[in-house]
Image 1 (cartoon, rainbow, N blue to C red):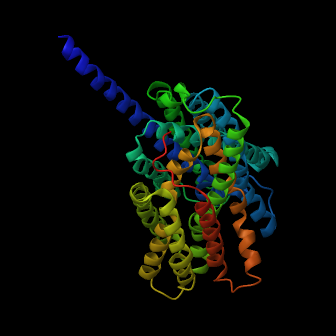
Image 2 (cartoon, rainbow, N blue to C red; image 1 turned 180 degrees about the vertical axis):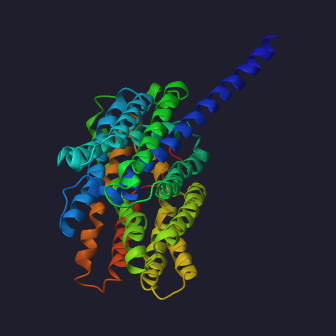
Image 3 (cartoon, rainbow, N blue to C red; image 1 turned 90 degrees about the vertical axis):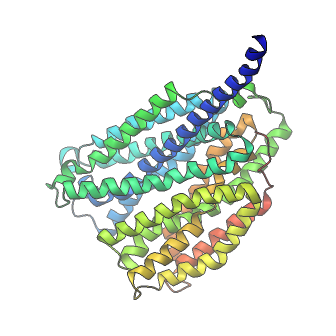
Length: 443
């Protein structure tokens, strides 16, 4: 009897750990999903009705600048949220930080859905929208800061690549989901003037959906997700008062991560922002249902590309994968992007094929980022380092439109985006070369 009990105990303990790991991974996946769903709400859902919040008769330049602020303020809030919730996650726990951040952007997203327009409250409407998006960015910056390291700390070495790729793949799933929601709302509540159904209430529904999803996720963390066992044990570094040599090492690591991920954001924005907003509609004249079809096809392939990249990097090494993939982006990817930019006279099938190929190639390194950054930092600084490395690095690349405008003064306009893509891949390559291999690191 005692022998049976002794042999069953480890199995029961292992089963409990596996269950906790699954819940942590599901939590990170859906945090990434909800985060990206919320981030792209202004781009996909709110962009057609920003005039609802703005004074009438604005010039095109001022209207475009005000529209960009809605997206940029969210990006500016994310690094601040990464620092705040990173410190909370490293000192109070990953689970606590995840609950607070997810609950926060559930509330703020709902408040945005309830905002009145310019005709009701004047300029206060737009100012409130900007302020709420900034606060939303703070909470969004805290979501992945805590949830992603928590999931990786529950994952065995040999599965980190797959889990990291799966978590980032939620971004692609979210983009497809929000595109589907937006298309449905355009059909149910057609877009028109200030009195149209979409302006009155249609744009609000996706924000309510985002708020509800975040609320469900917060409840899930409260009921199902356990605190990181690695964080609780604190075996690698003290949670406070780390020695000077440790702080210096973490600062050096953070700089290397920032260089790598800044380059990756630069290449990423050429796919996720420039292509759907400028290249497809303005250069290639792909609009309407064809644009939706193109984006759904791209992000469906990108979803599986992230996972494949994570699995491959687990076998060959994360540093080697970064180096090889960035060399391919700087050569093959840049050429494909340039050819796509010059394909205005080609068939839609040719344009779709080129767009899918370059998108999967350029975005593939992101399937390796989650485990890599988690493995680069010690336990007592992991969440803070992850959040800052992920968020702060997106600030400089977010002004990609200005860089392209400057490059247009030197290169032909169809070449400028490809040149910026090349610059981003070179920067990321330098960051990858400067860092070590991490796949065998003990968290």
